[in-house]
Length: 142
View 1 (spheres, helix red, strand yellow):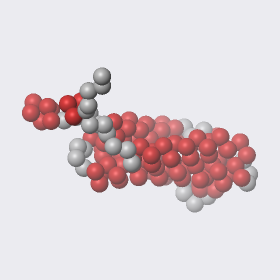
View 2: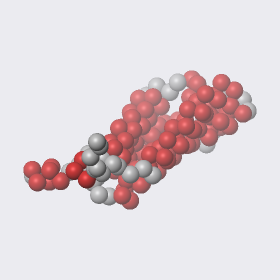
View 3: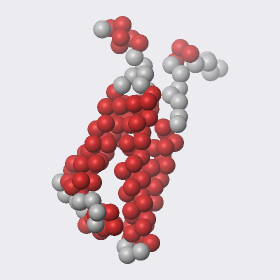
């Protein structure tokens, strides 16, 4: 057991998946299913015509839970790539829905569109980054 722990190294990319995935799951469960805000419901009116808000909330929960689980897996780059995709999909959907709403019937949604769009781009950027090498492989700074 200790040998396995000694081989394990901290990964910023996996920590991001775990942290944001858990946040997504909590946002979906507490903020969308449990208590959707008026501005969120109004900004998503174009989407909720076709998909109920509860289903969207469960999408956030499922995407976040799978992303967090993907972050717990070591040396599984394909599963981690799936996790990053599952982080980007709901945020991208929110960004697009809020942007469409801001352009048509709810101009106040522009701030949410920008925030969710920036976060989606951030997830895509982090997904392509490499973790730094372990300390014993780094050059000495002198």
